[in-house]
Length: 231
Image 1 (cartoon, rainbow, N blue to C red):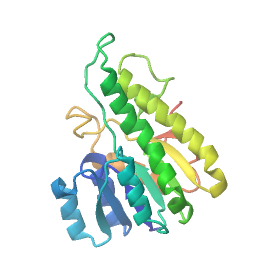
Image 2 (cartoon, rainbow, N blue to C red):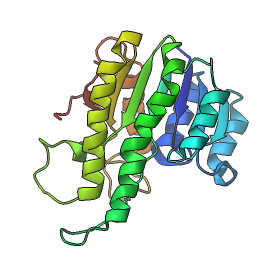
Image 3 (cartoon, one colour):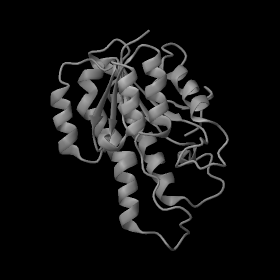
Image 4 (cartoon, rainbow, N blue to C red):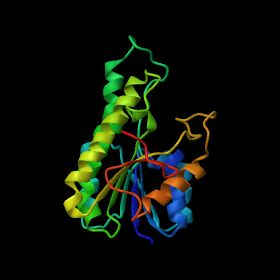
């Protein structure tokens, strides 16, 4: 199949590779990033594929998001992929938390994906594929937390998993499916050079899940390899 996918955080890493693989498959790609003028690789991709459109969007700027929603009114979006995120400071220990940074992480990783869903749900409902997906993380799994720590990033992903679950219930009458996805430990700027898999392998697995209408169930949390992750 082919259609239209809107991807946030498209200028590097998983987002850029997702744009690449979907463009190569003949999809129309709405590639959103904060500073298009600095996204040289994404600009080059737009030059290669007429189906790729680079759009300026800071997902925590809700006025800008609303303006984009008006600009895209009536345009079907088969897949809305919330990929943009913020890790926050690394190596922060118990007793040394910066509440301001915690709020910034929650804003980017939890509130923004909800606002994207609210803004573009009519576009998704008007499409054939009708899917909203959030790039979450296994560290957001409460059942899988055996090491503690990671308060800022962990809580933001646990919270967005709850957003996904509620959206799956609230948007079901419109036929919209909603998924939380773990990309694996990927060799990106966030994952670092010691990570286990490449962006190509991660996105290849995620793409299969995004296009699976039968086996992938709404309101569930999946690893990039197709296995389900406990909440």
